[in-house]
Image (cartoon, rainbow, N blue to C red):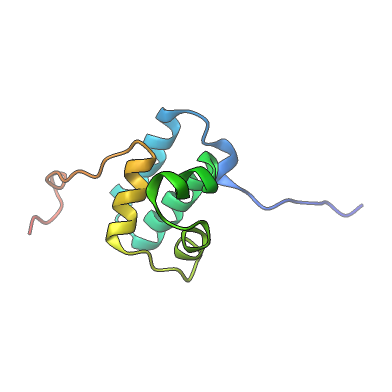
Length: 101
């Protein structure tokens, strides 16, 4: 019997503010722009793209396109999306053992 699988959808498991904050924090800590873009897109999907688009002032279509694999959202859009998600962007010194610039 052939086993069936389904595609993993992270957005289905982001249920609480704590889940969302931890997921975004991990993506930002990793520092990979693609991981950050994917995480923000997954959180927006979990919260409802239509609602996030309305709250952030970004069209729904542009929101989807920007957070797709080949999308490239502007920093201003990221700030607007994060704000509409109830999250803030902050800066802090890197952890000990990492190179400080």
